[in-house]
Amino acid sequence: MLGVSKSALYYKPVPVSQRDLDIMALLDLKYTDRPYYGVRRMTVYLQKDEEIAVGRDHVRTLLRRMGIMALFPTRNLSKPNPAHRVYPYLLKGMEITRVNQVWSIDITYVRLGRRGFAYLVAVIDGYSRRVLSWRLSNTMESEFCVEALDEALRRHGKPEIFNSDQGSQFTSEVFIKRLEAEKTVKISMDSRGRAYDNIFVERLWRSLKYEDVYLRDYANPLEAHRGIGEWFEFYNRRRPHQALDYRTPAEVYGIITPTESGTVSGAITPAVAPVALRAPCATAGVMERWNPS
Image (tube, one colour):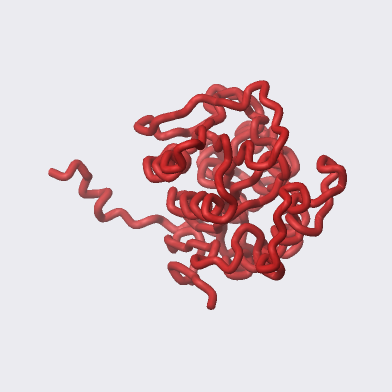
């Protein structure tokens, strides 16, 4: 009567097996090193290099769970919800010349030792490369993306253009409504075949994983939250960028406030911690939501 099947009402998420978690860790490493690898190459890599008996369909399922796609044009580059509105791409031929001209948002997969995984979302200024806000979650629901967006808008004003891919988190009604509330912000979405539109965000993820996540091998979400926050602080305020003439993103963005020192970048004394744990299937034995004192 409500339009919801009985099976959906009583559905409980199935925990991810240890074998799949191990395979996902290998896929994450390989993707960071070879982001142009698609399902076929990933399958061959697992079968030949790692000697793992796994089929292409299962590799595709795991990559989708991780939110990973190869960085080259394909016939099925994005997975938008067909019921959601998709906006036109506005960055074609545009030169980004100033801060707050273009913000982008993206999600990446973060492994947590052998216990599980989480998803990390960040809002980034396209000119300065500064991370404006971020959230960590163990589900791919829209809520943690909306929280990151809301924090960036509250703390840093608003961009002229907000760009994302066509993922269902960014085309969801609640996410779009938050953007539309900022009357002057133009919404842009990467179209199919535009694999490198968010390349500077991909470079951020690559740096984060090689310089922090893989080295520290976080065992749980609380460790990951603390360590990633420290790395974003380092990235924003103390890590010179060659593309920025060896200045830091904070220097180029032009805002370093006294209250920011010693806190996670883009989350200055947050009212809600940048970690949102909602489901037991990805990470065992953690509380549903963590808010440090």
